[in-house]
View 1 (cartoon, one colour):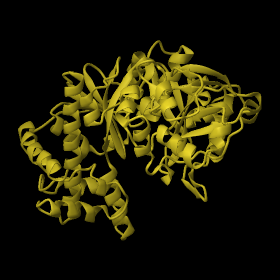
View 2 (cartoon, one colour; view 1 turned 60 degrees about the vertical axis):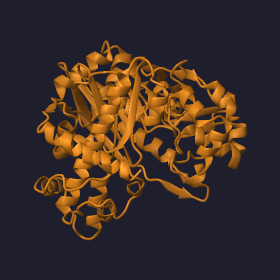
View 3 (cartoon, helix red, strand yellow; view 1 turned 90 degrees about the vertical axis):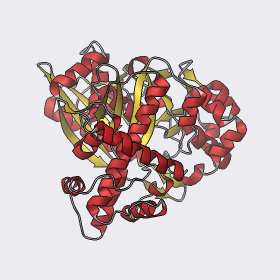
View 4 (cartoon, rainbow, N blue to C red; view 1 turned 180 degrees about the vertical axis):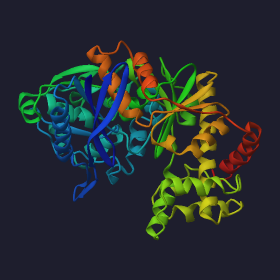
Length: 489
């Protein structure tokens, strides 16, 4: 048996998992789980990066104690957020969170300086208030002290890897989320960096996913009890999830959770006026691929309904919610899951009812009806993006491969198959950790390629297939749904 460790950090929690490989199969084991709460300080919203580092060390030490030899480890996290280092490698302040309000108005400022269309054409990334480009622009104009003395920018997984190994590098998949990296030249988008008047010296070495950074520093190895190679895996969590979805033939991927990312793996970016109009981004993936993708609201509406009812003393588990939705009348009304009023937490059932009322539809009154409206609307938004993906790529996509926690909701997964009119192959739930691990295993020579890694996942974690049903009925209701989208524009 060989054991690799995957550190998987999300915006709410983090985990260290062991990937145990033997006899052609991989088994995942959670070694250590910890919270990752946002911290509000007088200087804004920050990540407790030192606390995260300490928790990671605990998880690594647990793996060493349990299994002895560890073949390698790799870290994946969310994108866009960063730390700045001075010339001696010291961190210049706690990294700020992407939702920190300091970026307000700076997306428009970037448009004034270089043009948001030009930024998209150069980087393949849509304008957004949380982009690293916008965060750095806000920092330069509001609180420039750290930026003025910085010698290196590292994204969150790169910063943690630096503390583990002492090696300075930015991994390519995460670099591509910054709106400061070119998928065309495979280098920093220097013209955009210059146009935004950002210091060029802080943008350092970029490495491919699967690059060996080095072993743990001696001090770290002594603390955890072993010397372990650290791999710059697919460090962006969505890149890792896409790597870990074992797709076959001509397919679209869905990385499904609170948010869904729908897209295709390509060898070249698609950067056109139409892709910009529809809001599709070009992020980078393993083995020099492009993840051509679009975000959709996933389980958010359902999660927020659950939270709202629980706050009133009705804490129903997800299985119970799914049962309520499954017996409710179908297709009574629709909402746009990505509408602005649904973006903030709180009072989600009332928000869904208000949307239906103001658009002249039947107002759902029971919990089951509200959940059914949410579920079918989410599925229909997936259908719209799936069709747009077919249009933009020119691919006759025959199936959807879906990974992540969203596949636990079988009603939604079946609805996506019905709405899109193609089979949905669901699994694995732990797509991100799987992608992190197989990228490491290619780097260590335990696998020949990501394709071989996906075969390992298929053999280890069987997929569940959802065949489409009643396609004609969904074609008809899709027209009503799209009319609602036009109405609320």
